Structure formats: structure tokens, C-alpha cells
Amino acid sequence: MGCELSRLTIPADRRYAEIAARYVMDVARLIGCDEGMQRQIFEGLRTALPALMAYSFETAESAALDVSCERIPAGLRIVLHDKGLPLGGSAPEEAGPAGQAVARLRRHFDDILLNNLGPGGKEVVLVKHLPDGSLAEYEAACRLDPPDEEEATRPLAAAAAACTVRPMQPSDALEISKTVFKTYGYSYSQDYIYYPEKIIALNATGEVHSALAVTAPNEVVGHCALSLWGDNPRMAELGQGVVVPGYRSQGCFARLTDYLIGVARSRGLEGVFSEAVTVHPFSQKTALQKGLRECALFLCLVPPTVDFKGLRKVSSARGSLMVQFRYLKRPPTQTIYAPARHADMLRAIYGYLEPAAVPLIADPAEQARDEGPAASYHLHLIRSLNSARIRIDRYGPTLVADIRRTLRELCLERWDVIHLILNLSDRRTPYFCRRFEELGFFFAGLLPLGLASGDALILQYLNTACLPVSTIQTASPFASKLVAYVAACNPNT
Image 1 (cartoon, rainbow, N blue to C red):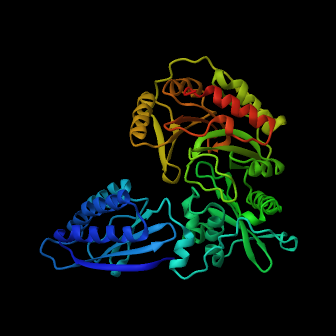
Image 2: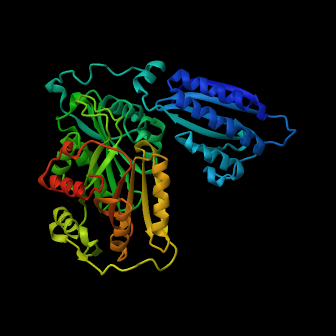
Image 3: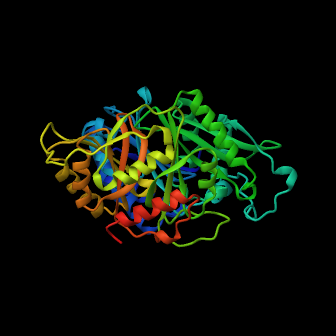
């Protein structure tokens, strides 16, 4: 879905690369990109276009390349299309020298996709998000109905308060994007929600199950989604929960949660979790009512650009998220290897989640565990949150040095928050937890079923400032206890 489409056709001659890059930069300026974003776009294309031309065509070959720009809900989509040599894969890293040049554009663009089109040639799709953009402005530009500016304060008639819940249909995708805008503006962290085509695709694969709260006559007033957890397909996240301001406190969010927990049960999932903001306790309270319990606190994970419409803005600093979890099946008896320092707190969390199924918490004597096979870990960068997530897959001799180097690189690149995911089923976790805490990581909490191989111990590292812990609003005594424990572990306080 897009509008304001323009296209420039240039010869496949590197001398024209700067002209094309300047054209795209000017389009970016027209839709509201600031000077820094314009410069990023210009420099990225000025480098990538010659590499793409050199790969696609012979030196003396007469050919052309199309550069098109299209305004989309999240910003600007740029498509580089030619009928030259096909690429090697759908990911830049799989596409040879040209793909490597495109891969370097990750520092300039938010999304990159390579498409081979058969006889139609190939295209490189680049997306640049507008951090301060507005879906309302986009809708006006595209002659859609913009949201009512008085929506957040309009009194709600009692007859209209009731809502029903149903699964999303493809035709609902644009309404979901509008609903998120009515609640968060253009500041929601999971930005796929502003792409109707992405919402449709994720629901079609089953990776996401979107549910809508609707009122007569079929007005969409809320949305929530069940998303399979990438690190363990036996669990899912309840997320993207939004209800437009005029329909809050009417039971819509509770109905959405009930429905999606039922979907999770029908799929045979073993657990669900959610991440609730802490600038207010409302979503935490709903989760508690539905059996989810606090198990972790992620400090500074909410970007300051998130706009909670209808709520007083507390500060421009980053906010925190409360993680809440619920077992859908009785967990089996298990043994975990808890760091001695955190054993009591982990035991308390397990007892709070499921009193009848607290695992045996072993405390093996910590000793040097740097022997064994090569270490393995996975780094996932979450641009919308400006955070990084490092999942440790296998401990090994070089792991601490590897993580130290990676941490330094992430800090220099100004990623705000880094999470480290450790497997509590591995007897070496206590030793490595202590080593990572020496690097500045500290306790965030527990995520049961967080890994396919076991429960996850989550450590966090802060490369930024955030709202004081004293501003965190909680919905239960245990949550307050967890906040105090995490704050006490933070080496920065």
C-alpha cells in the first residue's frame, strides 16, 4: 500500500549513480526526512548503485536501471530494478559481491529485500522509516479518511461500549494500522504493524494470529496478536495490544486476551507471555486477571518516541517493560542451574508462577568452564527498539572474549540496551553468568520456555539513561519486589 509514486530511469553507467542518489534524497526531503536521514540515503545509494551496475551488466552493455520512490505508512520505499544478472538469494549475504554491497546498506536503511523476478529481472527494495512520521498525514496524502483529532477525548456512549472479538480478515489490515495510530501515533515499536501487507502475510503463514475488538457496525476499536516465539515454537507472545482511547476500560482488551489464550491452547502451546509498559498499570492488571504473572523487568527498552495517546507524558527518557508469563500446561519436573547470587529470587519467581511445580534448583560449585567445543551465539538487532539480543547457544573457551568484543561494538554503535539470554538447563550457566556480570550485565529475570532447550535466564546491559525506577508503576506486590531486586542488581545505580 503506498502513494506519491515516482520513478527515474538512468543508464547502467556509474556516472549516473550520484544523480539517482540525489533524486531519492530530494524525495526523502519532500516526505519529511530530516537532513541526517537524507544524507544517509544519499551516501548509501551513491555507494551501492555502482556496485549493482558492475555486477548486473557487462562493461560495454547498453542497459538501463529504474529507481522508484514510493511513500508508505512507515516512510519511504525505494526500489532499484534492472534486467541484468540475477542475484544469488533473497538475503544480501547470499547474493555474492553485489549482495555484499547491498548488505552494507543496513547502516543506512531499516529494511532490505532482494527479489529475483524471472524474465522481469530483479529488484532491490530499501525502506527508510520516518521516526516522527504520521499515519494521519499519510492517509490525507492518499485520500483516505484521517483519524478524528478529538478521538482521544470524545465521550463514549454507553450503548457503544460493548465490543466483540473476532479473527482478522485480510480486508482488516489497514484498519489495524489505523487503530495502532489512534493509540500510539506513529511511535509503536513493532513497526510491521504500519504495513498492512506485512500484517496479512504474517497471519497467512500462522506466525501471527491477529484478533480484533469490534463494535457495531463493525468498527475496529482494538487489536491484539498471538506471535510464535522464535526461540521456542512451543510458546507465544501476546502483543500488539491496543485499544483506542475512547474504548479503554470497557473490557475490550480482556476479551482479546481471553480469545488469544484460547487460540494458544487449541494449538497445543505450553505457555504465553506478554510485555507490559510500566508508565501505567492497566495492561499489567489485565494480564494478572488472565493468569499471567511477573517474571522479568526490562529496563530502558521503550523508546522515548512512543506516544501514549490520552495519557500524560511523564518524560522524554526511555521507559521499561514488565514481562508476565502463564503456563498453559503443567510444567514437567526439571532441574535448573541457578547462579548462587540469584537462586533465591529465581525460586521465588518459579513459586509465584506455579507453586506446585517449582524446579529443583541445583547450585554446582563454580569452576573454570572455559574448556570444550567452540562457543556459539546468535545476535539479533531490533532497530525499532534500538536494542540487541544475544542468545548463547553453546558455551566455549572464547565466549567471554567474544561477548566482550561484541558488547563494545554495540556500545560504540550506540545501541541502547543489550540483552543476554542464558540456558538455565546448562550446568555451566552459573559460571558464565558471573563472568558476564563482570562485564556490566545484570539480572533482568526469568522467561520459562524461553529457549527450545530450557528456561531462559535474561541479563541486561544499559548503554543509555532511562526513567527512574521510582516512576515504574506496578500492579502487584510481587512486581514491586521484582523491581526492587532488579534495581539492586543494576551496577549503574
